[in-house]
Image 1 (tube, rainbow, N blue to C red):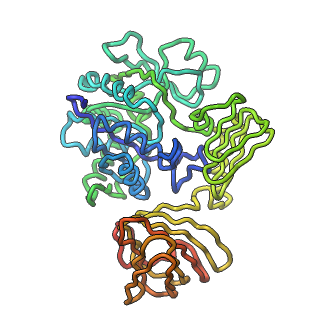
Image 2 (image 1 turned 45 degrees about the vertical axis):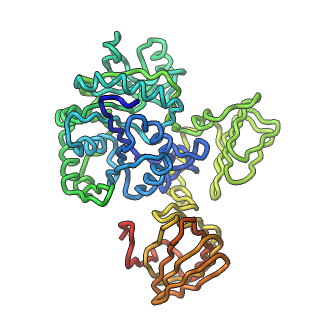
Image 3 (image 1 turned 135 degrees about the vertical axis):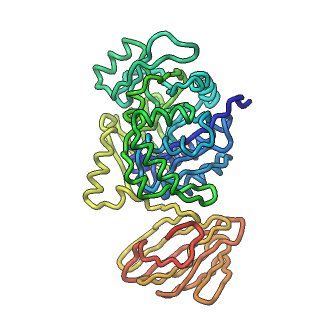
Length: 469
């Protein structure tokens, strides 16, 4: 049953998730990657808010807009998107969402796309307990009842006695060291800060005008000069890029008088490190946790993430092993928080795998770079039903396509061909071409490229149905 006070969930889809490398990378952050079974964290988030609204709003980057759309389709909801030309943290994203509402009384539930809360009903019930405070002019945050003295989370100190279903917030505490974290738990009245907020649009706009008027003005200008494209609203780049990048905690909440907290007692994880991911898998009697095709022999406290191929650990203790098609991480759990430093090091060294996956999503489907050598590259290309690539040509490479599944419509110069399984076509260098899937079944082809340069930037687009240049 839906609440009489409608709530609009606003999903914040930013963040790079570098602590979950090599599974999460800049080109495909953790919120879009299947982590819990075969579902992404974004899909699970959208499923979690379906009882509140079946048409939520997502704040996402231009680069990831079709990944958000895919997750929405999988979750069975219709998502509208506000597209950020550049990332400017949560204060700017929340300002734009509030400005986009037709009424100041609109109740907005801001929540990250990359958290895991398995009990959807308990979460929705907790959110509804915050409605009265939000309608009374508070910015409501949801504090997680801590189960151990974590140094990975910030803390909320409640102001003591509850006022109905909520507590006034006394202060926010930065991520503590181990000694302070233990002290906070012993003191009581301290909760993990989950970064989930419920507020009326007008309340948030007034708070931004008071504490961060520059962020509010930049967001307003970017929205006013934005463009509409179906369910996408593109913010104007220049105005939004000038916006100060700051979290809502620093920009507003730490200075605002009317902040309330509603406790949440259910299971929650920000899935912020490989230790957190490991904790989502059941442990055997020796403390080993396996996801996928992992195998352990004479091991203790070993976690294996192996979705693609068998990975065997023999005689190991206290290890995290994360396997992907093009990169492998082996780490001690005590160093899980340092993975982002490793990614920065790899990026500085020019290692492409620091930021890019071998498997690359596109609006029309996905391609996987299977093999590459001097003057050649082999890709497996999957095109969604009804999907089509841009009408394009290349200056430096020719291509040979072999259909291995489905039916392909191919434009080659002035010719149009219909290819079925086991049929192929050659696209000479410099010839205009396009690949389409005219059916309701996935199309899969093997593409062999040959030439002097095989980079993704050797594409001249003449026509594109996805708003790309």
